[in-house]
Image (tube, rainbow over all chains, first blue to last red; front, top):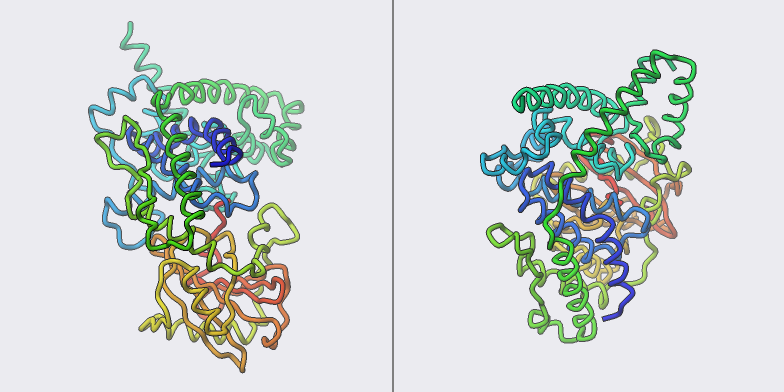
Amino acid sequence: MTTEPNLNFEEIVSAYYQPLYRFGYSLAKNEHEASDLAQQAFFIYAEKGSSLRDKSKVKSWLFTTLYREFLKRKRKDSRMDNYEPEMLETAGGSVEPHVRRTMDSHLAVEALNEVDEIYREPVSLFYLKDLSYKEIAEILDVPIGTIMSRLSRGKAQLREIFKRKETETSANTL
Amino acid sequence: MDREEAQNILQLCRPDSIEDRNDPLIAEALELLSQNAELNAWFEEQQALDTQISAEFDRIEPPADLKSSILAGMRAHAAQAERLIDDAPKEDEAHEHVLPFPRSANDADHRSGFRPWMGIAAAIAIVGVVLLLPVNEAPTQLANNSGAPENTPIVATVGVPGLVDFLATQITEFKKTAPFEKKADQHTDLQQYLDDAGKPSPGNLPSELEGIPSLGCVTFNFNNCDVSMICFKEDGSVYHLITTSKDTCPKTYSQQPTVYEHGGKCFKTWAQGEKIFLICVDGTQENLPTAAQ
């Protein structure tokens, strides 16, 4: 085994495993599946990353791969025979009670869960801060104008929900 | 830029993000802040809330062993690949070299993304790439076109080439029975078949199609010009990669990708080296595959 590829792998893993996990968590709302999605994205990179000509695109490649893997799993789980982005956008998992307990500490994620389905992915990628809006458009495979519109509406929704939840939390602690 | 437009653009600017602030569109909107106190107050409020929400997202911590688990898995994969390459002639024994991809401790009760067949498929693919892939000219035009203005596709509405018209009809007919000359989920197998048959093969795939399983291939003859087509399928979408030779094709194609919508299909065409490439999908250009990287 040569060391250089491993060093590259390690650098890449170190740089991106956290944001990838967070994106996976925002999609799956489940820490096990989020871990699995992140791991799978890196595994696919290990398998196919050598064909990536522009190494500066590793980050968006990994996020795209994780997102596609999530959609594949959802499609399989839901036995969706035809690929319809709108269907898949509404196929996000529901939050089970035992999972919700772990999310209570993440007010933003909880609030995100109440945002309209179509806005969730762009908004979560936006707040992960690792990707530009152009990269978000690439990852979600929608035009930049659409991303701008979805971010604007999604963020507005999230802010309202977040503020409400903050107020509720404050009231409950009084 | 009016205030509403500026607000929409400023929504894209994250607190403390230099990259966002250097974006030309956002930078133009930011310049308005000094001229509009009301807009500036709105922006500061937005930034404060964004900071708060981002902080909440940052609190999501991955499992402590996730990084080490990923690294262990990737190292095992690299070791597996090297051993397979060393033993390339012994393709039949590849199964014996497949190492399990380590699972995170957190995955114990959860499905793993890795399956034994993936290791076998990866092993065969690696051996296949080493042994079978000729050093053909790669259709790198598309691979490098993101962010390269000179490679931005031109959308053509008139002057549909005869080859595009021919293919639109052929593909419609082909889809009724899909009489593939060869079926395989690895494009390298299909390319080997095409090479053996003396038909044009693409060589390295355009980045849009990398990693997508193939279905099969078929060849056509258009005005004494050999044309090959490899079909790929992912998530219910079928993509056709068509390859022909510049030498025999009557029309000259530009290196700059051009998009044609014709016959209920969309074609992206470009020339690279001595070959002409087309990607065809049903519907409009929005359905064309996009490069992941």
